[in-house]
Amino acid sequence: MDDLDRRTRAAQATFELRDQIAKDLGGIDRLSAMKREIVDSAALLGAMIKDAGATYLSGDPVDLGEFMALTNAQRRLLADIGLERRAKDITPSLADIIAGHAA
Image (tube, rainbow, N blue to C red; front, side, top):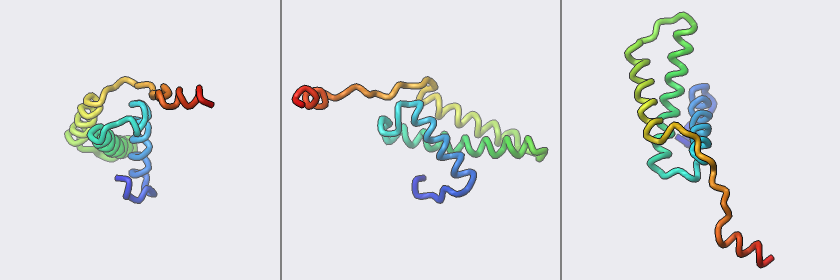
């Protein structure tokens, strides 16, 4: 996804949500490749859900089955990675502590 043009509203919404989810999980650098894939997919689904919601709120019809499928798929992905915020680990490494004492 990082290679995509980020100028569209959909891309902006996707990347913003991806960054927020990753931050809630302690930072993108703390996630395994598999968790990053889940975060990317959940964020993409989130943008699609927001688009369908905006369509509905503007008075246009929305396929309720598709909306519910998107919502349920996103919920399952988010449940897989956890719904609770995690603090970013800022504990200094042993090397940092030794370097600090040496200085």
